[in-house]
Image 1 (cartoon, rainbow, N blue to C red):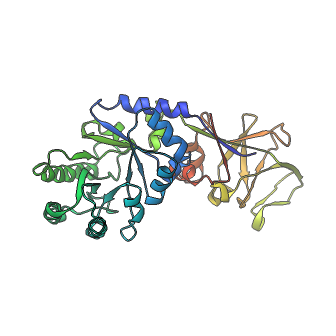
Image 2: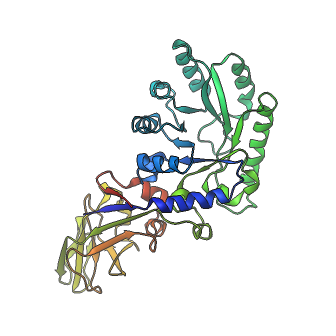
Length: 360
């Protein structure tokens, strides 16, 4: 059986460490989008709520809907709502990030139609990432619309492009300066608005920019983008499976689709029952990527199949049914991911739903 074991106390540890990096006056938003980065949004959200986290953040209204229907009652911010379908935003009392005139207008129309007022939103500004957000030049339009709006603006925020890079990064410094200009504009008209800029790496790298709130995502689950920062965190999940078959190959026999790997000599291989349908992308095949069997490296050979892959176990004394570690606290997900040219975010959030989540 393939399982993703999730240690909730490790998430508790990571939260405690992140809180130690901020003032008690600064509130932490726990990001649980992408099924809590693969860890299970419902279970993780309820655990975080039990630890005093009052604000959660998701990517879409559907993710927020799932949490609401599971009984999560805390504030839920939706980072990327669909401007053309805001039904669930209103129905489930979610807090959308309003990032364009289109979503402002569509949400206003829907709220007025239902005679709703004082609806909580968050304003997203583009300071250089050029993904989503109002531009600075649109502030006058926003301020004029605020006078007649049915919104309660809870916060104004932006997102850094390169928060994990060295602090002498001119691009990041320019983004911070741009956000300060935005903050000053809104500070003139509403002193109650909160501000936030920092993600997981930013919390570590830019302590002077914590403002009122910070957003912790991947760091809650044990990772940042810096090995030194990672030393203070505990990887919350481990992915384990078992060998389901062992083959003895002769020289020149092939392994996997499209003759992906050819034995140069007599070789013992094992078949592992997890594949690209489970989040182990094809880019992990025929690379430097390995799994761990009996505390020894077992290199992945051939192309990753939809439901399985093969490894070379010629130097490992093991049997069918023995445990296989894809990643754990000692062989973390970022190392596995980077060996295939990926990152921990992609690997963790790609782990498929047919993998059983086991909470410990």
